[in-house]
Amino acid sequence: MGDEQERIAALVVGAGPAGLMAAEALAGAGHKVLVAETKPSIGRKFLMAGKSGLNLTRSEPPDRFLAAYGAAAGWLAPMLSAFGPEAVQDWARALGQEVFAGSTGRVFPVAMKASPLLRAWAGQLAGLGVDIRPRWRWQGWVGGDAVFSTVEGEMRVAAEVTVLALGGASWARLGSDGTWAPILAEEGVTLAPFAPSNVGLRVNWSPHMARHFGAPVKAAALKAGRSRSRGEFVVSRKGLEGGGIYQIVPAIREGAALTLDLAPDLGMEQVCERLARPRGKASLANHLRRTLGFDPLRTALLQEWGRPIPGDPAGLADRIKALPVRHQGLRPLDESISTAGGVTRAALDGGLMLVARPGVFCAGEMLDWDAPTGGYLLTACLATGRWAGLAAADRLARGVPG
Image (cartoon, rainbow, N blue to C red; front, side, top):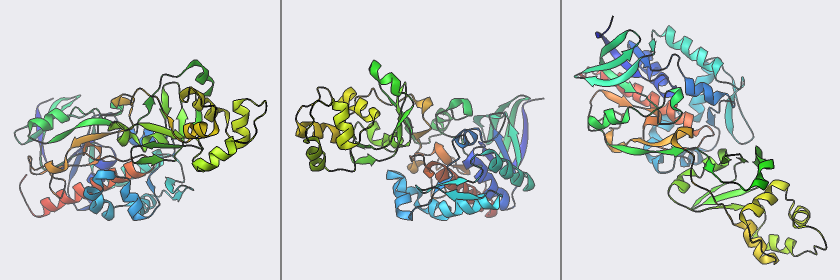
């Protein structure tokens, strides 16, 4: 068997959150949908995200939520307005998965994992007649046919509309390997280079830091350019990682210097005043603990990056409030949770259809937008998938040829 062709109304390439949402929108509009997935099973990155609780979205004011998308906020605004945090929660509940919002506004399924939601979603799609084909790897087009390499040989699909939801270029083992980029470039699609996002920093630690590996830094703030983060991050063997770091990765990518405020709840004068209290024979660590409530980790970070440590209260306060973080750059692209770059806004029309390839839509992380973890990333994947799926369904309804 091989080199066979089939005809279908709607083809979706990629069975992650964006692709499955596009398939749901198309099938819900009454169209026959085929979903091709390169891996043996669907939603692999989605399931990986669920290992830490599956942060679906964020419960916060719309303007603050939208601001998390930075330069892409204006582009994504109509899509997130049509399917934003409230809609994501309603969608999960409709699949039988109750949700709750934590103290920081992050929204999770009560089950605190992805597998029950993904099973319910797959069942719903099956009920809508969606045909999912695992181990189908997209190779591009020959004429009007989408070409796939499969275990049964080469397969070709002639689709009236196609939604590409192929992911970015991180975590290749889960399916997002970015190999689609040269295929689209040959079609005349404008692409922005891939760049790591939601990724840790490389730090060559001194030996004294080894005992702190795995410890979280909580009472501190990070600043890079105009970006500021109070989120928690972790000292690891490789460097620094965690949500607090991820929020300011775009600024670090642009070359902004990174500083750490070890006493973010106190002003400079307050820190200086406390440090000026009589120290006696107390060590620096004990003096910092008594005056500023420093734990051993914050003291260790000051000793790591603050040398020579100033002896006067004013100089020490300045170092504590703006400790320069010496790092060796971002971790590699494939270690990042997500990537920036991909299909640019200029390459797409308002329905996320490729200008260079009418009838082909793009969604999810393969689009050139960036967002931190904490619910923003997944919400935009779902929203753009739904937007592209509805636009493709509208094209079918109007009978526009692919």
